[in-house]
Amino acid sequence: MIRHLSVETRGKGLYEITGPVQALVRESEVEEGLCTAMIQHTSASLTIQENADPSARRDLEAWMERHVPEGDPHFTHTSEGPDDMPSHIRAALTATTLSVPVVDGRLALGTWQGIYLWEHRRRGSRRSVVVHLGS
Image (cartoon, rainbow, N blue to C red; front, top):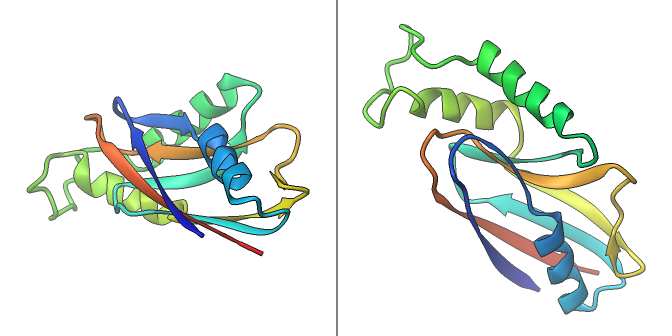
């Protein structure tokens, strides 16, 4: 079963999408199998991260800002703005596809894990995520 999620972002940051993905798992009635999600963009990514303490997400975002800053004079891909090339690098360093086992009709995430869409652009956007559920 293939489904599509549309996620509105308000700019850079981690947006938890665990709930909507889990809803698709329930809808699919897959009891045991695999849930694979892929974001259809090159300037945003997917990640599994802690969903209990927001400071973990803030620290990740701050780390990424320090290590892939905007305005690097070596970037030549600048036609879409100063945040575009850093966004591509950030997406390349993270993941565009995630797979999570489904056990007893639920995502087999750990206690403190959540699935996040990581928006790397400053401006908000509508992001598309394709979700495949199979047994």
